[in-house]
Image (cartoon, rainbow, N blue to C red; front, top):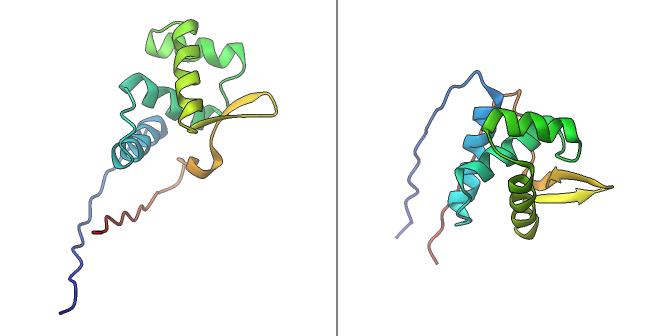
Length: 116
């Protein structure tokens, strides 16, 4: 007997590339059971859009936008680096290129959940 495949299409429309990035990383977190907090998702999305989290001005922008502090950012960066979501590349804290998308464009994801 042939296995049947279930297909479900879900569409989300957003003008805000930060929200789109946050939704994408939320899916990645959920599918991989990473249990990222809302603030960590915001940090990853912000870093993906801004390019890196190494410059003081970028960190200040994040702190103002999300009402947080620099020490909190440092703690989140440490955890996200351990999870290999953020990496240090030539002295800059960036999103792992394997997880980085262009959030200015439409994104189509294919998710396959297989049985053992």
